[in-house]
Image (tube, rainbow, N blue to C red):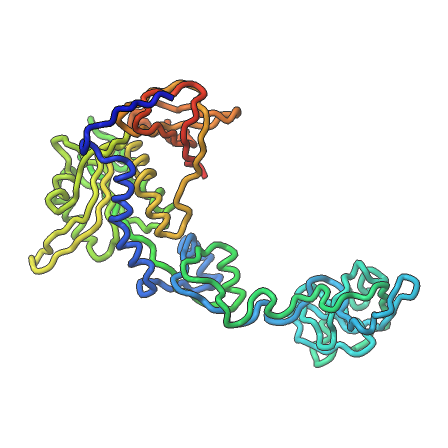
Length: 457
């Protein structure tokens, strides 16, 4: 890989690392605010709610510590299908001299805790409560016979609904080995004791976490509120998919691109498609003030004649300028502050402004915003990174960090898809890797190792 020793002139372009840090700094106050339990929202933990609106429960983060209200498990229960026994009564059991006892009534999961009569063994099912007096379970496979008595097994009844499991059947069961005390007994509180921390604040709530909350009888929890994003796609040339295209018009792909990408970062998105009119941009922000946390825009950030986002937001305090990256060089960032309609108060909103070409939009999102939003949401922020060999040579502008797209072939090498241009969205859609050629690299040869990010995981 050929790396130049020359560097761009001081201050001419912001580096990728500098812009990444600037985005993180811009959104740090939002991250702090969302960690404050006072901003949390409550989610009810009911099956009906989770089935009806599963998206509300996906990728949520606990806002406060939650303590266990009960022991887990809440009572001693059987780990196996087998017989609940008194260990002392089987102390002398051997294969030559098995110990045989009478079979008591079956204990099923959901039965009340009963009492095991002296000289008996009770058929017990997995999860059923250990009867008082029993101190071990012998798996059915280790008993003689290695099956439950037909009368007791086939009835499926809970004969222990009273205070004792001493109701005897006509059957006996033999044991050839004395069990250890506590064998196959899941002791109350062996997973978690009542009063201890069930889950700590900041815990990402996945299937196991929601499950343990439900198992402790929790009916609702406060979770961090999601980031609320206003997504603006700008340009006179844009039409919604399905509308007829006139000469010089294109369909808006950026709204679809970023709506899905933002949702994968845990954000709630509202979107607007705007013409090249700065007043419309300001009006869209004013209409959403107090209801959103962040504005993300696409298009109108460069140095052309119709840079609507720049015209609207630069006077309000947002900074625009080039980042040493290809594609995605023009960027905007900052806090936009506006006077309200009555001129007595102002509103302000953090702005992240991307260029409008679809690949530039996606690459900019991956490089600058995705890691920050996923970190705020409590999700894994970084893509999977690997250094892999190229199957073809590639050139890159030495003063810019070029991000190419590609796939991994069967030999474990990178095949580039499409060129470096910012309009090649179809090539991006076929890709599974972002391929990085950093500043200072003007040429990479066949077999050179370059950094890649997985974008399909």
